[in-house]
Image (cartoon, rainbow, N blue to C red; front, side, top):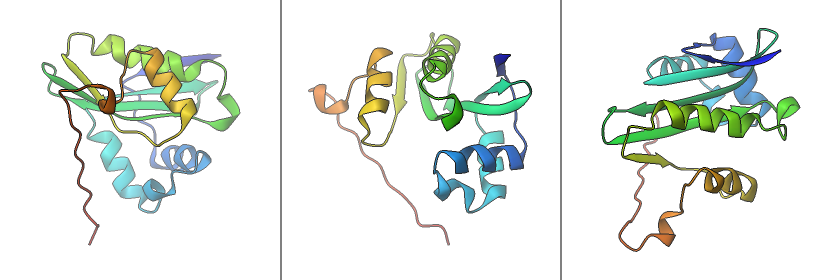
Length: 139
């Protein structure tokens, strides 16, 4: 059985396994930091298959004006089955009352289709918006 588990805080080992499975090694280089980032998120939901973590969605919000979708990950063994859409719909329902839903994502067409299907638009398509990002190099 596969189920979304709201409030699910996976263990550090579960997180490393899931993030590694999708190739997000920038996150797995420091498992303590990864676990802290997930624990400090405003909202986390796991996707569990018979108790095993096979997906996660997490984000940050002020509960009024903005929700930032940080991660939505589905283990490769469970991709292309609608679980990504299910997780995205779940988190968007949870934050339906929030005015802006923001995310940054890789330049991958499959991801773009998923987010567009949920009503997201590329900022390049919105005349009145610009997006800026700044990355800090860890010391």
